[in-house]
Image (tube, rainbow, N blue to C red; front, side):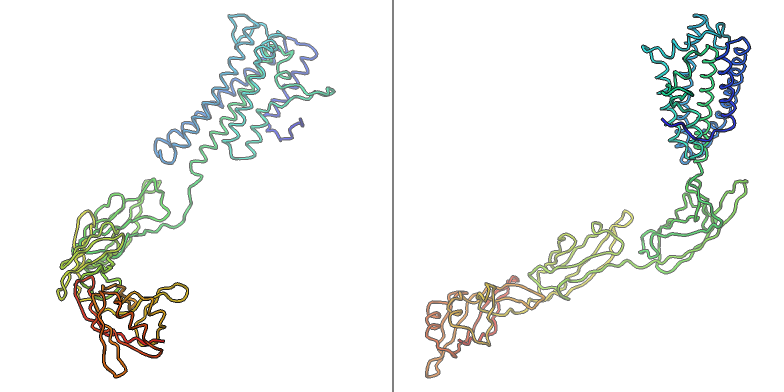
Length: 519
């Protein structure tokens, strides 16, 4: 694996240079002076660890205080800092336990890491760290790799991540003149005196504290990373609607533009504080109304500033839209589609009733069915608003009798489409013979209502001009009428008269005659 080219900090360079000098001296002779030198480095690193720990504690305390003052903004970062501190302390404790194992192997059960007796022992570090059964060195390398990756996921600055990567690197060590690289744990602990191994582990703890501090500083900076800087503050009134029905509620949100939502300003209208900044009251009379107030904002130095605002609202009488979908009047005896709506009120909160008949809901539409002709039908609309029901509209409709239908002969046209022959133009004799009888209906593009034909007469004329009436069999052609059809020649005509029909309103009526011309 290629050697890292990351630029090291001055502190790291100094420490690495010290290790190189001491290691070179050890290669010549592990003298008491060299061992004393390691002891001094160990003491210096221990003091540095204490100083870095105090710095990290101060940053952690800042995050804790901010989370207590403003949990909505700071709690998430404080929770993350506790996670960072926990991971750091866990690795720090693992390194402490390894130092104790090495010193205990050298000095026995009464060993003291701060007062090593057999400092020049060259076997204890290798026995503890490179034992293939326990694999303490390989496990420590894995723990350092996992911790380094975790801290790098927290630190957003690329330069700081590179510095942490270099400080906690466990890359294989390339010795000059040796082809194969040496594992990190072998390079650190093979043939090392106990005091040197302990010093290396203390230095690793120092790197852990350094990485922890960088992560905590990053989290502290993230607390205000999403804040937006503004140079102007403006007060706004945001009503739910400027049009309010009498008896309803007027609701408006009064806010300060660009204000921190976790520290809302105080709102005053007419000298009275409005809790939460929502101005709400019941309206009593119609008309246009104005109101004004101010927002009071607390500054960081303890002073306050006021930002005035003004707005208006209009109160209108309750209204509703009631219209007949197909026509301007209601017809007795049939279903008349009706559209009913109240502006600003959901459909399920609207109800209606009708006099002189029934009114039923059909989905989002209504169906009115008046009963008596000549008597007005009154539709009353009520709506549930602000938890109470009130009448919003009353509409009166005239109730009329259905218009007379038109009689016709039903037959099947070209392509199988149903056709209606209403007279006044030629019809083939074959079509006439295939027809069953006479029908009647209203089909004027507004109403499409079928009527029942009760009876009718056909009137033929003989060669002397005498009229020969034939009576139908209800709505069907009688046999005598069909026999008369067979005797008709091209160009002859006859009339269908005295047509009696009854509609869905139950009223019987006589329809206009139909002139039939045989083609």
